[in-house]
Image (cartoon, rainbow, N blue to C red; front, side, top):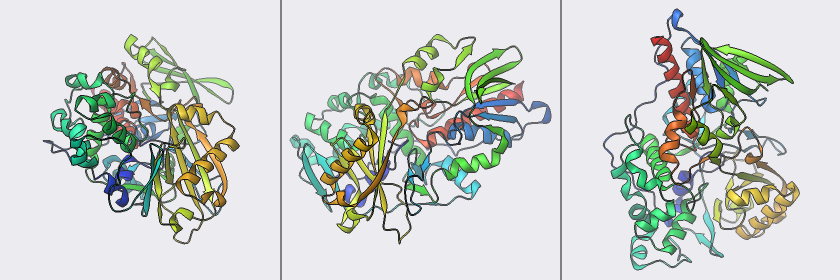
Length: 503
């Protein structure tokens, strides 16, 4: 899981103790690496500068607006919330001592080319978090402590799986097809060739490669962070993982000093009054000479005309926007049916970093309702004694727990954490929960691709309709990531810039 958590799967796997249980996934030897990222290459001549309306001030929208504005186009961003960032959200209340938590997307990586480029351009400071200590896992009802060697797993593995070890299992049963698929980030890559993998879930794919039920359970538990392997498309998982690997290589997870919101805030500082906040788009009308966008602001209906639109809002929000003329039938079907993953995150402030005092890592993976645990964020002053633990819950459990009163959610999370770090309940001071699926502008954490959807639906979502262009993590092979959002925003900006030059 990359969007909407304080922990990426990559970061989890790079943890020193975790690596004892699950060695680093092998680098795939593919013929070519991803191209260096480029914004809009050149400034548009005066007679080729166009009025562009960007829907949404998430990272995709901000990147598109920034690149188009820098190239001389007249850009306006319409954002339904009163802040920039979309699913990037740094939360500072109700925490004490200057603590803050990343309630939304946080998976930066010093190998992500767009992220690195913008961090440098804006003069931001990124640092690698340090996670150390004994990792706690709770699987099949057993509590395991991982120090410097793999544990005896409480699942039934066959002889081959025992011989391979967990790292070998991932290589044989999941990633051995990587060299066949090739590099998804290169021009001309076709998903159609691999439709057979889009017809099955990840777990079904593992079984087809020879994994036992115990092996499937173990691999799913260890690496399905933010992703249901028994329901999600195998091709989506394979392509997104391979694409991430090609883009970031051996890059490591990083945090931004001051919070992830530093990045969207830097874009917003540059764009300034070009961003219109609390502007909820209701209609997009294509006309002979351009596009008309209708939106509500301060209770009034307003409109704006332009030459092009970049639509970066998540699919659930697209359902509330009327398009005239209608979008093609397939795109309408996708917008109607594509699901987003429910996400509930519970953040607990603790008086002392008790887990560290006991020698435990702040990373834990469990089959308890709270599922995943991480200290959030991973950067903090050396003299800071308080801390924040995030419980990241997805899927049906996110809906069930998210429907509880917040006080009951905090009580549940505290009781679950006591099973992970015995004694910690005495140090919990306060808590807060965030339910991304309850916000109609997002509808969940990220696009969730079921079998038979990714091959046809993702390229269709990325396809422009005349003067309307589309971006967002759901339109990128690097889906569910900030890098995918940034990549898609740059793509849409290039499409419009090139169209303007040819008009």
